[in-house]
Amino acid sequence: MVINYQKIYEKLGYLFYAVASADKVVTTAEVERLKEMIQKLWLPAEPSTDEFGTDAAHYIWISFDYLMNEGVDADIAFDEFRRYYLEHKDHFPDEMRKNIKMTCREIAGAFRGPSKRELETLQDVEDLLQ
Image 1 (cartoon, helix red, strand yellow):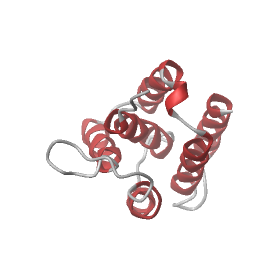
Image 2 (cartoon, rainbow, N blue to C red):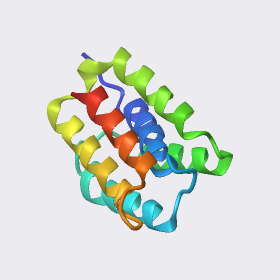
Image 3 (tube, rainbow, N blue to C red):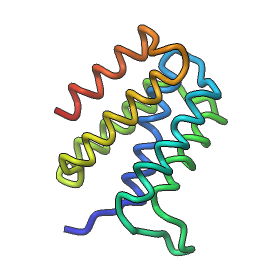
Image 4 (tube, rainbow, N blue to C red):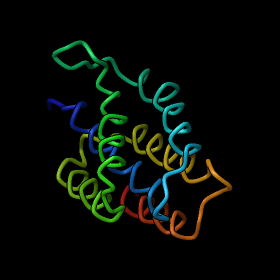
């Protein structure tokens, strides 16, 4: 089974954006926490790179940044991740799912703790990844 980590990380950017923008506002604290999590958790996770030598985990930030700049609705971003996840569930081992949940919680809690809407999104993530 060949796993396309670049595509997985791109779609994770959608999920993490959905969490950060669930309450219609992406704060600097949420952005900074995501960047920290990419450095601490996602870059060391596995060694894949794109054709230019860029670590594939950087695609988390690339897609997040794109969605933020475009002002994409959180529900649309979440649905995009959900579709991809359900089609490629076998590409998401337990450890990766654990890291996804941790990153989502960190983003949601980065600015004054999670909002009501972020808590709902976190529950959606839990339900999806169980």
